[in-house]
Image (cartoon, rainbow, N blue to C red; front, side, top):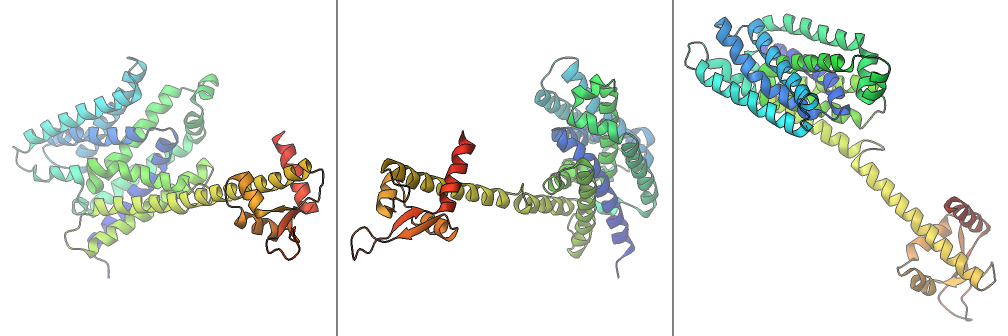
Length: 368
């Protein structure tokens, strides 16, 4: 029977996985994956600030502080990019370093106070810090985030794929991007207790990357990323409970990354294996076309459509062994074997069939 603590952690992890999958999809499509890392690291000074102001590690205080700090970091990146003309990578790196350094300094100050021993869990996460009483507010905030995404779905979709067209249609692109940044900050803050500021970005990116390999539409990607995020979170929580002293956050991240890796390898069409198979198919098709063209060219040179060519001549003409290709084209009905040139010869010759001539003519028309 599952312990109540494990159930609590698994539910919290699944909720965080759903939110991370949904919001991470927009980050991946917009090419702003590092923005999630910036917001995650930048939430640390807010966490410590919330503790210093409230005098405790209450959910509301930590959530509010981290949200303000993370959102401020995201807005700072936008300000540096648009207001100061700083390149995206420089703005992201500067803001990340600045806020995280401020958080480390505040953490060292807060550790001199009583009751601050648990603040370090927000660096790498600690599942035991999630209480059953936290599930209700987490669910409420998560539902608000999902509702906001649903209400602004069309706007977020257009801004993600074509911000220029969105601006031309009169949409407040800057305001929508700011809202998206705030929603990402809320998602990251909710997951800090489980994954921490260091690993939270992986939960945002990995499920979205995995989902992107299997589907082609944004709606399907968001739904699948949410499912994969929830599965990675829940499975990570359960697996970590099987090992004594194993941290939940890193196991969740490993599960999500394993799903992403498997998707990158196995997904049809976009996966590494599928692309390798497609490249191999194209190489074989090109090789077959070259052999057909060589035989057709030799036939034209000799003024005989039924001219038969032996393998040695083809190998010399092409500069490579053509044996496997000849057999494959014969099996496909594009070539047929002709008797050897000399009586009693052991080497067959090859000539085009009607289907082979039609295929060659089709290839020539396509190149023209």
